[in-house]
View (cartoon, rainbow, N blue to C red):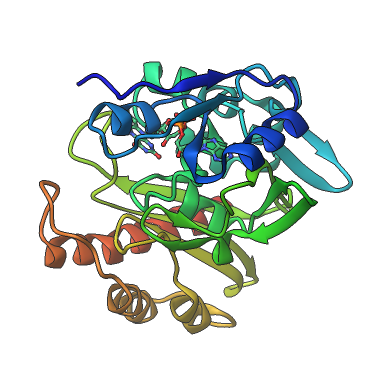
Length: 287
Ligand SMILES: Cc1cc2nc3c(=O)[nH]c(=O)nc-3n(C[C@H](O)[C@H](O)[C@H](O)COP(=O)(O)OP(=O)(O)OC[C@H]3O[C@@H](n4cnc5c(N)ncnc54)[C@H](O)[C@@H]3O)c2cc1C
């Protein structure tokens, strides 16, 4: 359980980190909280010759409201999300979900940028970012570019980020008044990844659904946005029959891997059920 040897670099600015990434290309890995990368290195699933530790880059930390957007630095920890007054008021889905991620030790070190950049469909932030319609800000040698969460994940551990790019922040629109939200996560025990989970953001116009976004965790090779299920709901009044159809549509896009958390059939069924519960909880918060 000892990782192979590597050279350690500790830049103090994003431009310095990007220059190191450009220099070493595929031979380097960013080190954020280390809670996913270091276990992979110990198991020798990852063997980077260079580690670029971004913990000493102040511009990557913090949560602010600017230009009508909430901007979260990639190195912001789960605990900082959990206890952010700004997020509690403007995007309360994030603190609610952060509370369900891992345990206090991991939440103290694990970062939102690392959770997303890792590209693990079992991580919670990818599906939540999809439901929030978040945008990821990436920086590489030729400057910054922005990628929507729905376009970022290409496969398990595969993302849109190039080898010489890093994630600097996550941008999210603050919730409009009366936005309903919920993250329903089925897990075997505290601290575990999801067996299946659903993030919902919803707005009602009278009795009808005006907006809904559904993100799904750990039920396919990437996090999923359930767009067809969303379309079934737009302009409709909620009913048991409609929720049944929505759950069916969600289940139809699931393709989970079988593991100790359950077989594919069970996880798929739970994705439908978590979605139904998240919608019900979100609607209750709209009223
Ligand atoms: C016991 C345990 C339980 C856990 N349970 C959960 C859970 O329930 N839900 C959940 O979502 N997660 C869970 N995790 C994972 C945890 O949240 C990790 O912290 C997270 O996946 C990675 O964040 P990190 O900051 O530790 O990143 P690291 O481990 O440092 O990095 C992860 C990967 O992302 C890359 N990376 C990191 N930051 C950047 C960046 N800014 N730009 C580009 N690339 C970057 C690294 O190079 C690496 O490839 C758990 C972890 C443990 C150990």
